[in-house]
Length: 88
Image (cartoon, rainbow, N blue to C red):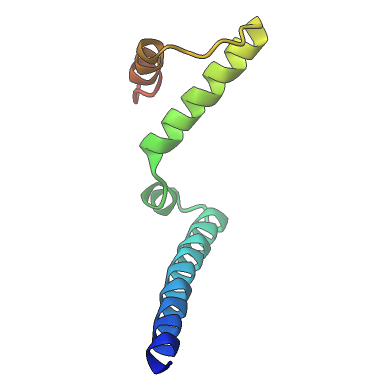
């Protein structure tokens, strides 16, 4: 019975540390945004993932506007992500 309490306590501590680290990171991002510190914002943001997300959203909106409800083929998705998420 003691080991069960120990395991539950250890799991709760790990979940608390995990949630606390996410909260601290979010507080840091919010303070960087409020302070207009672009370098900190970029350092705390996964820019390639943001670029790919924006490309996916624009592609989906474009296909919806055209009225196409089909799914993109894998080669089309690779081409869109390769050319759409470039830095230039």
